Image (cartoon, rainbow over all chains, first blue to last red):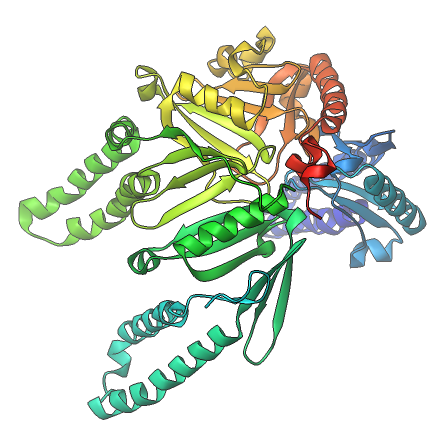
Length: 140
Length: 437
């Protein structure tokens, strides 16, 4: 899905970079188009790596989420701390048949999210998390 | 005014007048702001007619809304009923009650009244108020609700409150004088006034206005808010009261403090003063536990809100030497460490800042790296706390150490939660006999 977004931004940028100087200042300047093209190509690989980097583990007492290639983040959310679990799917996500699961704790900085799950898996995860959260609910 | 002990009760009859005051002020503000446009339309007749219609209408509405607003204490909840046309009933579950504050805006202080504010676990939407009650009623209701919420017997005799800390006006003034903000503002005001002095123009005056506002913010407001700051210990937790014009009395129940920050600004270092701010679940304002106090006194009070925390005795370690590539100056001042009860992180060259969180409290824990730190095999660990001024982070730690910290902290918080202070702390501490359902 992000690849689609990337192409949607990257290709017009390439075209714009090729056409504008190419028409205004001569053919050679159209080589500038290589820059966005290269960025798009690199982005293509980066999106793939980023996508592969998302992983989560349902451990005994907490949920572990890890993601990121350049900016890496590992997050541990104890089940007892979860206040709500959402499954959401935006228009783009629906078009590609995926959904994301979001966890909310009393802290706004948690920002726990697992994107790109199949809807059935997302629902299963939500129910499993909600159940464990219920069992281990702790006061604030 | 008050009904039978467990029946419905009403607010103080002066309520509509005090609330109406706000409406009158808003209308006046609107009229004054639009005076220029309205001036053709406003004639004495119209004003008189308007008042003739508006005043009785406002009075009747005020009276009716007062008539229909009532509250009642039930064994496990407080019921609030309001609304003239649309009836609204709110049930505040006492076991979700985070705190009860008494707020006294200036107008209420003049008339001896007070506002009672309830914070429930879960966020801003869950704040309700009862305005206005007499001060005595407010205190009584607060004590009753808090002792019911804590599971104690409301009829049991209460031990008198004990004053732990009170701030003298002299020290408050000295502490404000020892911060940079007011002086910087004064210098800026002086600079802005220079053109006025030289050629009598008003530009300087206009330029000085925002700076004056800043000066107000850094100096007078801090003075007014911290004036008469007192911390007392009561069975329901620490009572904090302060305020020169508007006064506030709020209660921090034991175990509700999520995270603590101790600040020691450069200029206070010589006098050995510190300032403490806290994150309390369900409360987003009034987060100051101590505006200024000697460090030893501050730590003593800290040990009361975080039981068993001995912040100065926690062994702290610096980040690895290679962190100096990223933070050449701050590197040597950052420390973090943990003992059996709390995690402590210290940082800051000019203003020394110590962040403390009990193991049971973090909501979640994150380890993060950016491209630069990833290259140096460094990572930052953050222990997420509830909304508030305090953010507990351990920056630029060795990656392996950070990973270990993440695992250890997850384990500690798992164990810590089992031994944490329960929600109904008194009933659970002294067995079910102490509780009233």
